[in-house]
Image (tube, rainbow, N blue to C red; front, side, top):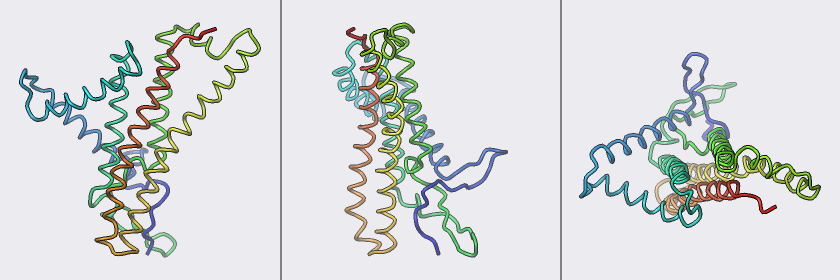
Length: 246
């Protein structure tokens, strides 16, 4: 019986030609949770905030202070993007730690061997999800660069008649491509490694006591990775929307 954590997300069913994997199913749940929280927290804005409104305001204010310390007058534009990245990633990370995620599912038989397929899987343990997040981050950054600098100013960051600046610009193009890999693989690697660690501790060792310290560790890792992704995106946005000195 195969109980290892598969590197790729497992297909559950199809909607027409569109395959639905366990990580996609979890992504839908994370999205619905965030939409529901945003709706109920802001449905009736009051001068004396209720419980959900109080939580929402505290979270936004904390990030507003953080983003404004880096972005300055661009905070109003950058803040929604950065907070969305952070809360989507951290909710996805923490949802993957809940009992049943990764442990409730069914068995499939491949080549005479039974393989366990969970109904739900941590969204960021799927490279497709983290790559999609990285693509959104990079494309949003370049869109904002064109918005603030104009097309000419944007292209001037990468191309110049000065041979030295042209060489530096070409290196910048390469660095923009590597951002996709660094953002996606960092998040994927840390979350996937944690999932493998918890699965191993829960099935191979003492299934109740031993995994507890690892759960606390994964809570910290989940928070740190969400913050790193959001802050790197913020820094990239600030750098790419600044005018060149030359």
